[in-house]
Length: 256
Image (tube, rainbow, N blue to C red; front, side):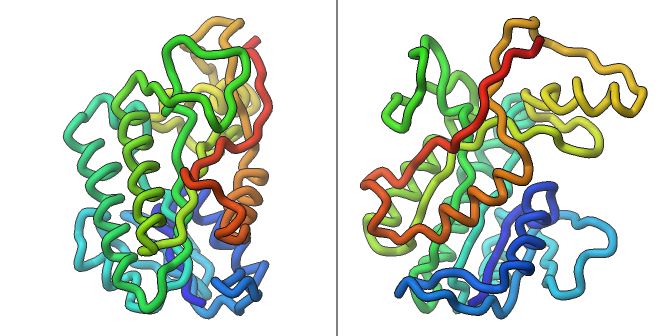
């Protein structure tokens, strides 16, 4: 089985690739474990010393020809992680919609051209929620995004569900909590501080927290999100509801 990971050069994408290399197989449409023959990472940049077993394709998600080349015609598994993160999508309206919405639509259309409908895992976000919220959010809580990033993600959830309904893909969308702790430097995600307030002090670097001590964050560790991505992929199509969307589990903690 051939696997494509968009955003494969990123923190989560690359670790997902390594986990799949270690696993060695993935479930096919018949529910049988099939050996992974190739893992392709699609991104604008990649870590140094990438594992030689991985194929790296440098390209723009909006370059349809490049996306189709990366997919080939016989990719059976797609993990779509590439996106402009929350703060970046809010700051650059056009870029956010170009990558997060148009890029996802292009990838879905390219996936339709595979020999068989691929399983398609889309990383959505808790940013689809906003406004006045109930004490407990579940899969039935109505999305009400308060920013461009959340709006783009919920639109893509509907696309994944509809393409699945038509039989073009076997899709499933996962709403990710804030992933912490991420290594490296802060990115443009609005929730980047959730890693920074832990990571920077451990490295002897000051960190400015932009929210109060009582602010609540829904958290999931990097290791657990990798497990969740693979588990969601492995679940048979019959176990998913008509919406094909779930909230990933996590832990709620206050900043303090």
